[in-house]
Image (cartoon, rainbow, N blue to C red):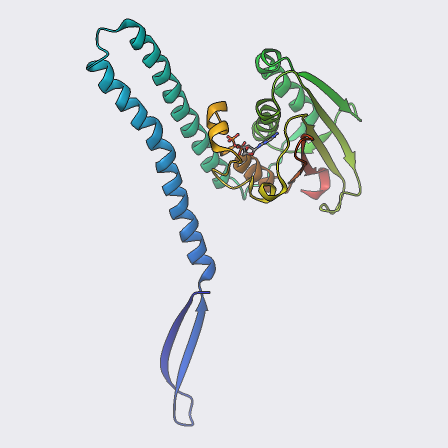
Length: 268
Ligand code: ADP
């Protein structure tokens, strides 16, 4: 705990006294530390592709100048590194935008089933490329809620992309959506969208930390797959803005289920 102690002499009528004020600034300190950690993480994440790029540029201008095969190989790696930086900057911008809008409640009425449809449509190349079977189970024809269409699209894209990326090829991914009146974390009716994969699952110890920025279970694998470590942090902030929740159920060896819970209608 960190305190600021302020003292001032006071005269309360019965002689001189002292006023001592204790101000608990633990929370402010923690926020400062989080900000410093974040800047350090961002710098680290940006530095590694930059170091790789400058190394390859040097080699291409020097020893590999006349080696056509090496040149092609190095250029391909450089392109990957540049895309990695692009993804990182894009996710950082999303995160900062989402954070700055977090207090404005969305008011537009949208049909979450249509959002799911459009996410699945735009992920078709990834779905087909990995031979994934998407099983859709919807209990209603439409589910209307007050939300930000683009942001909820981003939430579901991140979760379905993760199910495919981490779940692996040739698997079935279930996407369920239903409404409920007795979701314990909501005061009224809610919609639950569940995304279940048949992948390797996640060890319990990691689950509470998955929505932290740059937290990855296996950083090497995440980087290889093209992850930035920011996807679930973005999901969490968007759901905060919608007064929603993310629940993660996973067992090692038995796949993972990510459930998005959003309040319906009057609750917002
Ligand atoms: P990334 O950009 O690395 O994918 P995310 O924030 O989206 O970052 O996810 C954080 C970490 O959670 C991932 O690095 C991965 O280790 C783990 N993860 C997310 N979704 C799944 C999943 N469906 N199955 C297994 N692990 C997952």
